[in-house]
Image 1 (tube, rainbow, N blue to C red):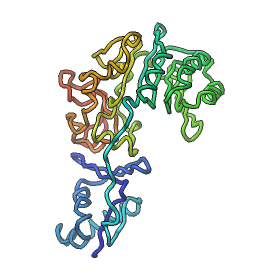
Image 2 (cartoon, helix red, strand yellow):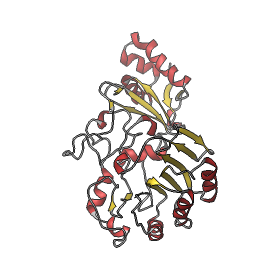
Image 3 (cartoon, rainbow, N blue to C red):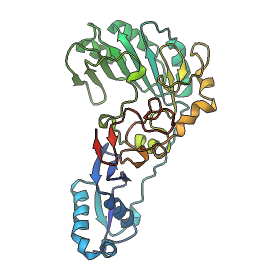
Image 4 (cartoon, rainbow, N blue to C red):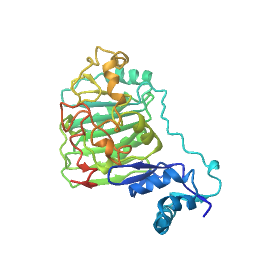
Length: 335
């Protein structure tokens, strides 16, 4: 066959130690494939199918054809006689925002000046915010906290809040109607069983009996958190998938890269966020990619999962694997 086999531009192979994946950045999904197929796909843009057959020996023709057909059947690739018409996707990642996301923790004694924080986040161009309340909060009080961000630059707000009897589905639906930036609400410590409710295409509500009472809830690595969107994938290739352009404020108001990180950069009530994030030490974790992290660098999922630098398998090693990851890329299995 004198044609070339190409993956769609949004379908990017990622090689792991024992197996590989193709990430579909358009459909936010991935497909498991053998490592040899990554090698074949690397050749297929410059070599025809017939040339690939010859390279691997014609006794493998049927197997290679089956690989290609598998990708076609799953809508990941196609044959072409003009590969130059289908250039690779630009995988660079850029953001004009100084800070893209912020995480703020609360307990019953927290005294955050949210009005001032909101104004500063807008000055930094922040688009995403997560508020974590480690205690029960009535829906009226929750709504009052959100009012501080009504005129901000934020595009999305995620809420984690302790169960309160007022946090019924109808009440939260009203909250979401009045605060359109809120995209997800998770009610922890719920007396009922785990329940997930899709409000609309962009908004969700979850009740979970899991008790979350501190920042120690951070750092969980699971396939349920995988994200193979263009933005997430391209950022993870070049920057840290959790800490890049992020600022955290812990429950006492201390500025950190993440509330779980040990290093502090001042009190948010007296230190401007813009001053804290300019410190070289603050920005250093932004550049730690999964290609540098031990074990993760051999994982096929490294560009679609979230990293954690707060809880490490070997705390004395800054590039250690996240402590709460239970995946072994060498055995290709979850513990």
